[in-house]
Length: 123
Image (cartoon, rainbow, N blue to C red; front, side, top):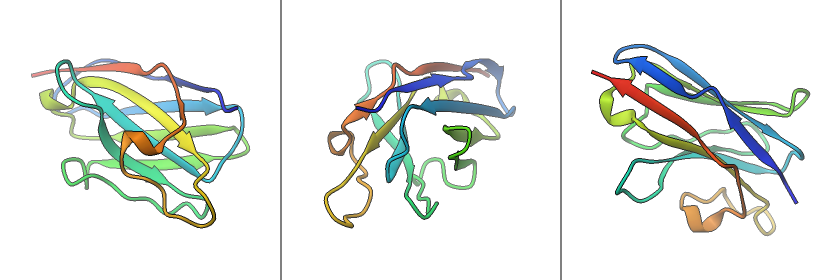
């Protein structure tokens, strides 16, 4: 079992930056960020694998960075140049894929989820 607790959300003006954190109880190979706006499906932001390799969605590439500090048991999502359309509830997720399978890019691929933290960007 892996427990995940997100923090760092809030209301920010467009153009600003924000860092979200996710404290995890156990480090496992694939951890990721997702987001969900009202009325929309949960959207993949990107994962970080056991070698700290990252991927990012097309919509956010260049404006986000995912990192993980194992000693602090914290997964982070740095976001910059925030836009109104970035307003959503942000979730961290984790899974241990079978063998050396790549980290999933869909919500169905993840086993463990946090409760999320709300980000509201005002234009």
